[in-house]
Length: 537
Image (cartoon, rainbow, N blue to C red):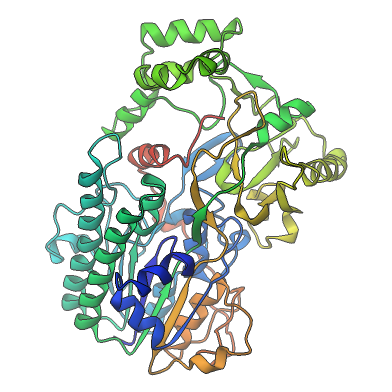
C-alpha cells in the first residue's frame, strides 16, 4: 500500500499523550515518535458531518455544501448523505488516476460512488448501507456489520464499553479482509468510537483507555497486513471538557423579539420517539397517531402549560429528572415550546451549524426580513451576539462572523447568515427553548477546534514542518494526493503540507452528484437524536 490514512474521530494530543505515556496505545506512540505529530486545525463548525467531508475533499463547506447533520430546503430538512457533498473525495480522484482504494467507516460516504476498490460507509449511513461493490460486506466476511453502538440506557456500562471495543475491532477486520481482496494503493479506515466514548461516557477515563487500546491493537494488525509506505493519522476535531455554560441562543433571540415560539409542535427539526421508531422500521412518520397523554399535554401547552413551565416548577422540588425519566418522549415534546421558524426574524435552526439563520423574504418560503433590510438586521444581530457575556461577565463568543468571512463557494447561501465561534469552545451552543439563556453544559465533554495529525513514512519529511504553520484540515486531501504524485484539484482550499513534495494544482472535471441521489435517513435520525446532535428547537 502506498498510503494509509487512519481517521480517529475527536482525537487530539491532550487525549492521546497521556495514553502514549502510560503505554495504552503503543502503536500510535510509535507512529508519533517516528514522524511528525501535532495539532490539526479544524474548520467551523468542527463537527463530524461537515468536517470529514472537508477533510476528504480539501474544500470548505461553502464549496462542498454540508454544514451540519441536516440539509435544508426552505423549512424542510433531511439528514445529509454523500449526495449532499458536492465535490470529489480523495479516493475518487485517485480512481481517476488508476489507483485502487479501500475505504471503511468514513462518515458521510453513503451512498458511495463507484470506484475500483471498495467502500463501506460509516456514520450517518443506515445500519444496512449500500456498499461498493454491492457485496463488499460479504467479501469482507461481515454480514452482521454494525455502524452504531448501543446507547447507555439500553445496556450496562460494561456492556456498552465492550460494544465500543467490538466495533473498533470489526472495522479493522472488514478493512483487512477487503485489502486482501483488492490489494489497494490507498486505504482509509476511520474509527468513530474514539469520539462516541466521550459523548456517551463523559469523565469515564477507564472507558476511554479501553476504547483507545482496542483501536490501537486494530491499527497494529492493519499495519502488519498493509505494510504501507506512508501513514497519516488524522482527526476531524479535538475533544475536551466544557468549563463554561450552555448558551441557549434562541432564548436570547426570543428576548430580543427575533424568535417567535409555538406550542403547536411546528418547530424544526422535531419528531417524537414513536415516529423515530417507525422510521427505524421503515414506516412513514406521518402515520403516527398521538396517544392520550400526548394529546393532553399538547392541549395544555396551547393554553400555556408547557413542558418548560412544568420543569421550572418541579426542578426546585428535585422531581424534574424523575418525571422526565418516566414520561414518554413524545408526550414531553408535544408540550414543548419550539421556535416558529416561519414567524421568526432570525433563529438557530440546527446547533451543529454554529450559526444564526435570518428568515429572509425571497429566500425562505415565508421570509419576514425584506432584502433591503438584510444588511442592517444582520449587523445588529452580530453586534448583539458579540456583546453576550456569561453571568461572570466574560464573552460567550470568541468571534461572531458574517458567513462570507468564513465560507466561500457555490453553496454559501446554504450557510447560516451569522457564524458563531464560542470562546475557547468552552461553551455549549443550544437551539432549544428552555426559558433561561444560561445553564450548565448539557454535555460536559464536547468538540474542540484542534484535532490531530501524525505523519510518517518513506515519502514524509517531518523536519520540513519546523517552520511551517499549523496544518489545517483542508490540507489533508492534497497532502495524501501528493504522496501518489497526483496534483491537487484547483478547487481545493488546502495545499499539500511541506511534509511531502508539493505539486502544482490542476483542474478536474466538474462534480455531479445527481447519479447518487437517494435517501434512507430514518434510522440515522434516531441515532443522531440519541447522541444529542438533534434537538427540538
